[in-house]
Image 1 (cartoon, helix red, strand yellow):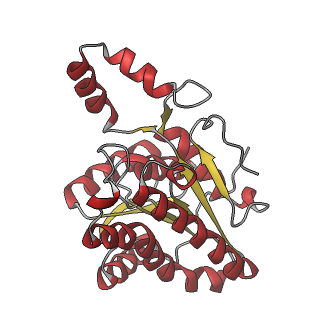
Image 2 (cartoon, rainbow, N blue to C red; image 1 turned 45 degrees about the vertical axis):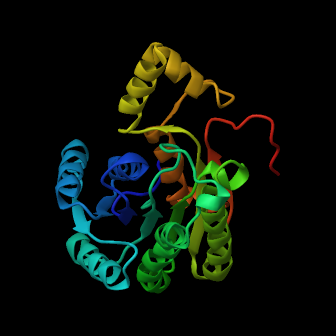
Image 3 (tube, rainbow, N blue to C red; image 1 turned 120 degrees about the horizontal axis):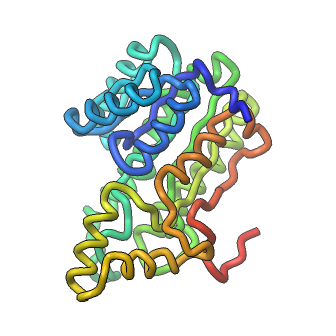
Length: 267
């Protein structure tokens, strides 16, 4: 299926690693020119070079902190200049991933930590969206995808649930506001996902418990109904479709990409 993405321009926040990097790779493979936005210049340059070499597309890194208005504005101005025109696609994935440390209990949730979590994953997504909407409106077309997480549908991590539910609410409100202008907004909910961080985590858990890495991975895979640890590239496949003109029938909705969370029914 031709996703009709060739020649479009995208910004992927959090694009130097993890799901963001996988999304940038998938978009570039479909003919999209991509700007990766993150805070670490060294990591950005390495990721951009890798993706550009593999895809043959224009891939650039722009340094930006999504918690700072001026930094976001400067980063998007650089992205537009480097890609040669307005941004067609925004994928928001700049946030600290959950699941690598025990979530804080109620008594441990400090105000500073609470506000930092929401400033990064909710307000940060808003800051970035504000920078692309005018250009998308002018051309009558755009796609915005927010990467959230299955904590929106599960208890066990209070702040993880709050920030991810807020991202889903943001997506729906944006979709209703911007849909008449040809801009469609969706949210994806990854679950436990294999990224660059996964192998060291598995090795550490295996050593701590005195079992094999294969046994640890099997336990992780058993948390979904397909019994397979979903890879970041598989999440990226879904996001890439949502970024394409082929996704026109989907707007404001949340798509779970966690391999099938067991038991719960969502309709």
